[in-house]
Image 1 (cartoon, rainbow, N blue to C red):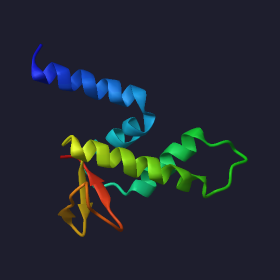
Image 2 (cartoon, rainbow, N blue to C red):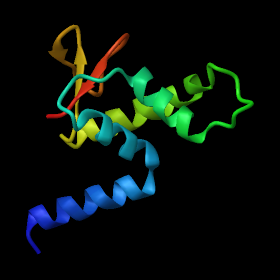
Image 3 (cartoon, rainbow, N blue to C red):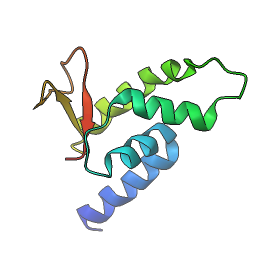
Image 4 (cartoon, rainbow, N blue to C red):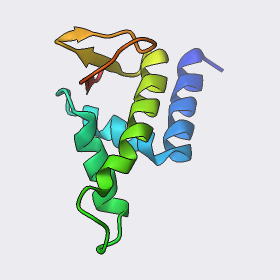
Length: 100
């Protein structure tokens, strides 16, 4: 089995295991920088009940951040802070996500 086959299968499995990864990868697939808030809002729009408060998307921000860090550590995503690529192990504040 080639390494490329393994990485493709791993990517598919991760996206199937955690839907947040799928949302992140779909959001950055356009090639533009994406704010994590936009991804959290998309998740909330798909999953929240109609009676949920308008700021329910905030509960998904932690999951988006954790999965973005995981993807960045595996070189499948870039975390952008102040226009520069940030270290996924040590960044604070506002950030955006970009396809590598």
